[in-house]
Length: 223
Ligand SMILES: Cc1cc2nc3c(=O)[nH]c(=O)nc-3n(C[C@H](O)[C@H](O)[C@H](O)COP(=O)(O)O)c2cc1C
Image (cartoon, rainbow, N blue to C red):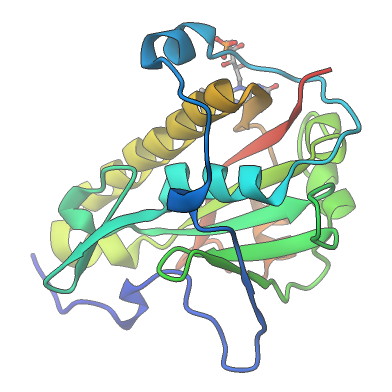
């Protein structure tokens, strides 16, 4: 049964004292044209990354095509991935190891501003996130990694128990878009589902109930 729309409806809301770090406007980045069929055919998992940095425009592109806002209408916003009821129930954190102009650490993406804020989490750094993964090397050697967390209330208020199903389906949409975008940019990536739930939630300072880590991915230049 439908209940009231929760106050946690909008993702990526930051505290007033947090410094907003802007990203290059994805619509102004002169991307090389990519043939969609080639990108789909070349999509693959890469687990070995070079020591090279990612450029900020590349990070901006990855964030835009995984959770970026492409349109706004009557209070709803539409992103580059579909979402049941256009509710977009995720928070997006990134673990930066090597991105031009960004200190290493954990950041949160603000889709409505297409910007980042430095995440204030308890023990959160790249090494601690790597440690909770079955294959720590994926995060440790990545240029940047993505951590998608779900806020179930953003779905359940409208879709009831069926909303749980949508959370997991939508996480797949996001990660697939990351794979395709990485293929287009000739970057390597690996989806990561094998990690300790309690430990990653603890590192991020979330309770594992009202918000929990649903999926991760590592990205870097191919070796
Ligand atoms: C839901 C999901 C979870 C995954 N988790 C991991 C993981 O924890 N570690 C890993 O090395 N690869 C992981 N992968 C990547 C798969 O192993 C990879 O997709 C598979 O070997 C097929 O290779 P391909 O992506 O190149 O086609 C995951 C993939 C999916 C879809």
